[in-house]
Amino acid sequence: MTESEQRLSLDTQAARRLATTTKTPPQAREITPRWLLRMLPWVDVAAGTYRVNRRLTYPVGGGRVSFYHTGARLQVIPPSLTELPLLHGMAAGEELELLARSFRQREYGAGDTIARAGRPADEILLIAHGKVTQFQAAGYGGRLVRGALADGDHAGGGLPGATWDFTLETSTPCTVLALPREELDALAARSPALRAQIERHHDRLARPRNKHGEAAVAIAAGHRGEHPLPGTFVDYDPGPREYPMSLSQTVVRVHTRVADLYNEPMDQTEQQLRLTVEALRESQEHELLNNREFGLLHNVDPRQRLYTRTGPPGPDDLDELLCRRKKSRFFLAHPRAIAAFHRECSARGVYPDSVELHGARLTAWRGVPVLPCDKIPVTRQGTSTILVLRTGEDDQGVVGLRPTAVPGQREPGLSVRFTGIDARGIASYLVSAYYSGAVLVPDALGALEHVKVAG
Image 1 (cartoon, rainbow, N blue to C red):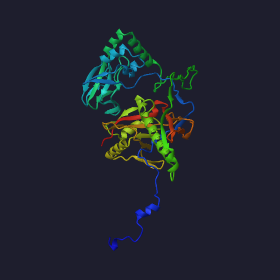
Image 2: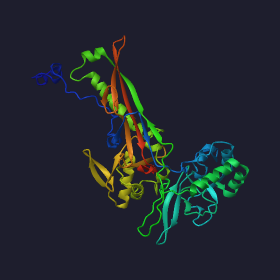
Image 3: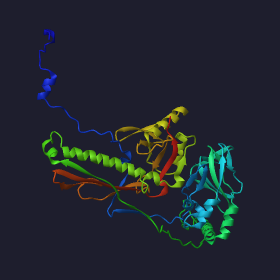
Image 4: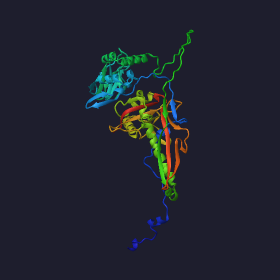
């Protein structure tokens, strides 16, 4: 070693032997902002079950029909036919099997007309695959888009002699299953159960109801004369939905040797519990969106499910979501869907708003924040869903549910309980998060589905 290479002071590597390092708490890539958990109003549930009472609403079906494939041939799954208004509430049996086999498969190309406004609505149509747009004549000429139908949706099946209120035109190649009314009538003539079901449906259509399908309240308005006032009452739904608490749980194990000897400058047990709680909260948000019982994505009313006009989410699509409800609090979308919305705005020369929320600058549309959430799935075809929510009990919106108190509560709805030390000196802690979610009225939650997010 030359004289120029000889060190004149202590080397940093040697100095570290007498020094400590500045450490961060353990970091985790899994942690996200969890905007849904932060923005939902939480209701404390004392009894463990939350019941949503509503006014009596006449059942009209409106869900989606399911299909199975045999090569290129499709057939409707018989029990799913009860999602049709005409067959809602009908028990599964031979009649549904016969109806399922009576549907005829048709293929349409993009731009074909399936039904035309004003023509007799003499068949029931099931959209097995593809997208169909509903048009009607506009007040000043041209055509007005009424909505869209996609996989599992249906049209027709009203009263005998009814006509189409709109024109059905395919936006993509479509596969449609059709049941002519003559064939339905022929089946009903041979089946007393089906005939009784059709008569019940016609009876439901004749009952007075408001535009939301609820039993109407008779009211007299006006101040002239002395007319007898109508008598009325508000009937309740005889089968209100109940939401039991769901939970996410795990057991955290920490060896007592680690907790005793390696506890400075950070508490090892506390850091283990902190990261576990973060993972439980991530699981909670995922379940609130994706759980098949109470998850928001599975509890959107069929009449509140919309489709994009062109594929990517544009300003028109978000406007359509907003106009379906009052007091929309926020949108919830995958970050890739938000990026696709920005691309559409840029292409049209439109600039979305921005708002500051909890110290973060976020995209907004018409003053309603668009919150990112990576728990909303993106399909292999590059499509996703955008949700819009009205929240809070006072506004008959969407609410989160949690127990009023639990033993060992660390945070609202979350408990940490020490469960003992085993023969190997390992201490165990049971970590539990209790939660659920409820949609108080159907129009509190809307969804824009099949949103194209691939660039």
